[in-house]
Amino acid sequence: MRRKRSTARSDNGTGAAKSSTLRFYGDEFIFDTVSGMFFRISSTAGLILRSLQSGTRPDRLADEIQERYGISRSAALRDVELLRNDLAGIEALDRFAP
Image 1: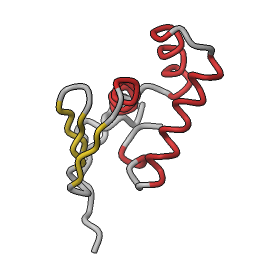
Image 2: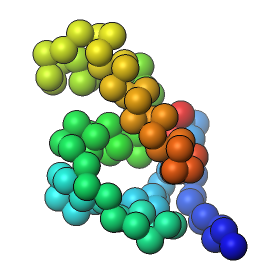
Image 3: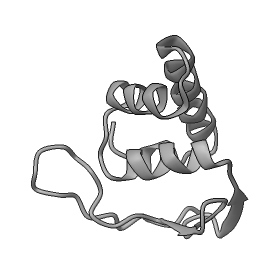
Image 4: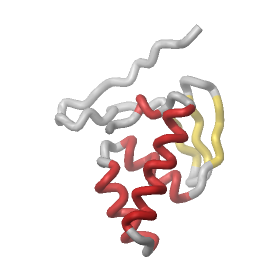
């Protein structure tokens, strides 16, 4: 049986969650309170997850990654989309802003 999520939404029009079902432990571990699972993540994945959680749009996030890591825009977009696809595969993407 699937548990109901109780994620409040902000009123600022971005659709960003006020509270998240993800709990960050340092830069490398997150706990998903819905699934009850821990995940080990890279620092880049942590940046992406925290940014999505705060409501950053994926295209804006790609700009931040490009600047921070000195990679091409296409590589940054690819990395964001690959992580989003992985999240969709474990049904976690719906807990983030677009």
